Image (cartoon, rainbow, N blue to C red; front, top):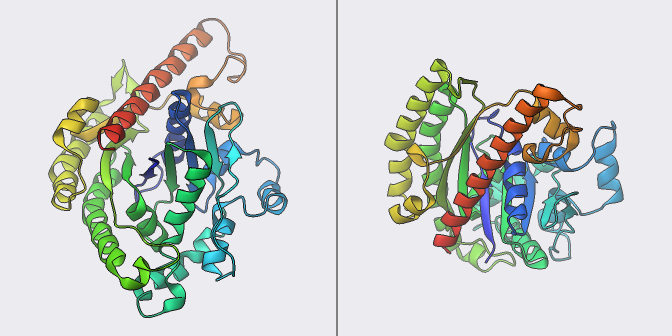
Length: 350
């Protein structure tokens, strides 16, 4: 059965999109079929797959590939068109078989208000009843079309109705974070918001209007996979002193605030499942430091960090290339371990 994983944190600037791309590629490299969904109107994930260097590249893609993006695929539901939702013809990611993308659309944010109204008033306004379940239905039929093992959602850093819907219909969620004061504060916010969204989703799924809609809103099965900590500097192979202090504060916020709140809401996996995945402290799936210009090289070549070649990094030679190659290999080991943990956590609960 296809598993939907949401990459979500209401704090921005935590390398969420880069991690989504690298993790999805590694899962595909390990033999899984993966569909990435760019649900962020900024379309950064789309830009990591498609060549958007020309000024009108995204508009040209929309024009030449009608309905091959998230917003247009949902158009029959949101615009009450007299036709059903159909599976998205995904973009095959160059260089990696088994990996696909549902591109984003800069206009997706315009549907935020309609969805918000529908999620509050769908019981009394019948014309809106198909909107809350439309995302889940679209992902379900598209995943079936591609026989996908995973659908991984790259979400925007916000607490609006679209993210509320997408997190609630996911089977699992991962929280990308950074060792800084804002991510620590975000854990407290997530401890309040995620359980509230789960309670809303279960109430919504019991509404007759949504349970009998053309696109049924599902009862939530959401579970927490863990946190990915990234965007910090190393010194002598370890985080610098300033970052180490925030690692401690982040671990404390996760252990003392986030996990208890999620546990009370029934959003945690079993202790045995987490133990089987051999997570780092404080439910950490992976720790990913900055590796200088490699992220920029990855974005420029539109391929993961761990597949970069000497040519991709401007032909660095000699000892410089040797150090770079070592860092690339460290990225490979990190993302291979991350993908393995995700597989274990999701397969244990299948």
